[in-house]
Length: 462
Image 1 (cartoon, rainbow, N blue to C red):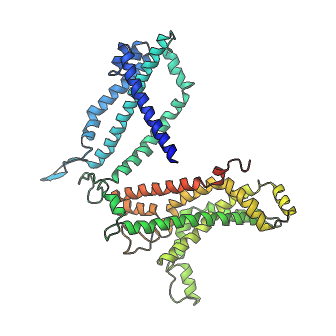
Image 2: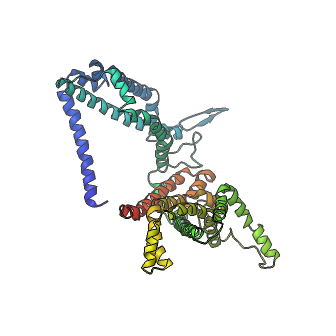
Image 3: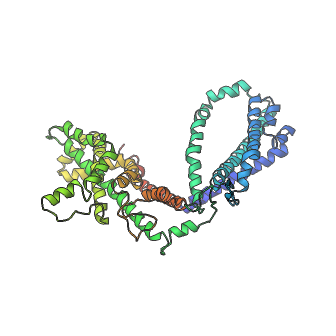
């Protein structure tokens, strides 16, 4: 985004805020007594004007809000700044429970969001009073209660349809994400677990620790894991893509017999559950696995090849094995797309004297990249967070004393995050790494997205 666009967006936001504040003030000054009372009692104006359903809904939302705040929300919100001060203690044989930092953080966030939602409803209440007053001054009838209810099955059916999905997204996606972000600014770890021990806010200390290159810092490990994550995602995406395309072109080539048989054999690798095949391969290439066993039996080697214990070899093995896992998917996609390329293009190229490589470079590849560009981006993003292949093959090993936080040489950011959470219960650093995973994924996705042919030239293949 350019500097002018940023300034324009900021100006638009400030203008919208100013307009809302101006409307709130002018509505109160010019409004009748029903509107003025509605500033304190939500829905009072609509109720007095005969909009019973709308008025009751607004009043009910205000009542529920104050019941929630008085009986639940205020208690947690008052301790949100400290995340609790009273620790759980053992008094004789009795355990006296104090504050629970986990619940204070969770319900404190929920309370702040509910307060923000109530402010939005309060603002909608003011706007509704303005709309009703304007309509009555212009001698226009207000909609009946029956019509208001029936609108939720007609012109407002989208609101009815999306209410439950939006609520589910908020509870199971938005709230956990906000909670994770907040945990990154606390000292929540194995030594500070509720309700036994309290944890508290520490500001940017965890982020400084992540980028610290000292003996106790995570900086060196983070850079090592990040570089390997990007290298892995690049090779896992593009090697699979071009080899899958090559296999599809080879099978589709005229004169190749048993096309269905070759496609079936490749598709069978997809039918086998990935965790079964990957675990089997991991055992097969182990020090005591079948590969090393036969190589030693035949006298080709005197000691086992360290497929999973040598950092470089382990990384190469992961990339090679992922080729076997990923090619069938790309082959199926490429097969369908290759059949849609107009044969006239190839005929014209042949007449002009183009050879096979030139036709591939000038016709096949541009068409495939144009159509599969968004899919490639999805694959790359998925490989940045590819937990299965890495963890089932190596569990992130081999380990090293040079890497902190229980990280291994084949760990991606996402598998390192998993170890931080499950093995080390270091939730604070896991939250920080989670934020970094999001930043890396978002930045790479945005940069690559703007480079896609289908985005830069939407009319290119129309």
